[in-house]
Image (cartoon, rainbow, N blue to C red; front, side, top):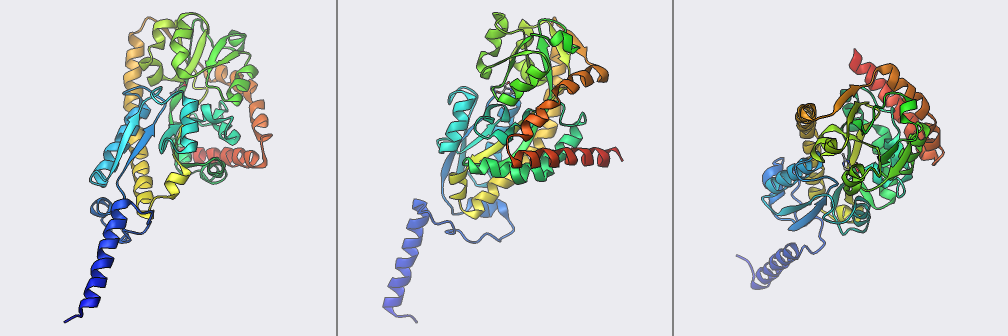
Length: 364
Ligand code: 6CS
């Protein structure tokens, strides 16, 4: 038994709530049943439908592309297609600097954006530009990138201040030098025109090592090597091979002077405007993709090494003494970084400690 007035009031409220959910109505808690414990079915029910633009900095089939497509697959699967993802490869939405800017304005919701391009916008991100800072043991680096208080505390705050929410800092393997001559000593490096990403601390580091760094966007590297506008470049092996740099270079130096680092991040306003449930889905998927990406990257690095061996080039592995000579020269880059701000000093000192501790822990 119920009265007619009550029935119509209930009916009205029911229709209103459906209309709000359908319009996306900015109602963060329209689907407030967050605690079901079954993220699969709960994630797909209710909530706003949306299509996210996910831009990255590499070509089809490269590490970032595989990462972005895995993200797409998992998000679409976990939300039964309620959240869709369009993946954009390097160059399709402008240069890597353009992508960073679009991430800040919200024209792109999610991106993989590397510190090599963000130093002018977020000076503290240049911590990732310091050579010989990270460990020679990739397991140590993975641990640090997963757990670091320096990265997810004060450094993340610096991204947030610029309208970017960083989810995960991660790495794409050791960097190698390719060149038209052998480079094993600082003397060999003198005056070498080496292409780098544009962040000023990378440029400074190469100046310290005696080179003549030439910053450009990635799309220009091959032609510049081919036309001898530059003599050398640095990148992880999978990228060197997939970009065919070995066609136009004679030497591949296994220098391990650095690791390639990057960040998966979202536009802050977009992310904070999502329901808590959708924020959690995205964070969980990024974590899952990150874990998955380690094995994927090992496979890609192995495949790349096999291909590199088939090329008409000389592969040279630097000894630890040879690497030490470059490291010595690069050390003032750390002091330079600390001068950026109090936060930079804190980030570097904390990170140095974290790397040391992780090395000790994994050596046990
Ligand atoms: O050297 C570069 O600019 C590029 N290298 C890698 C591994 N990823 C994207 C970036 O644009």
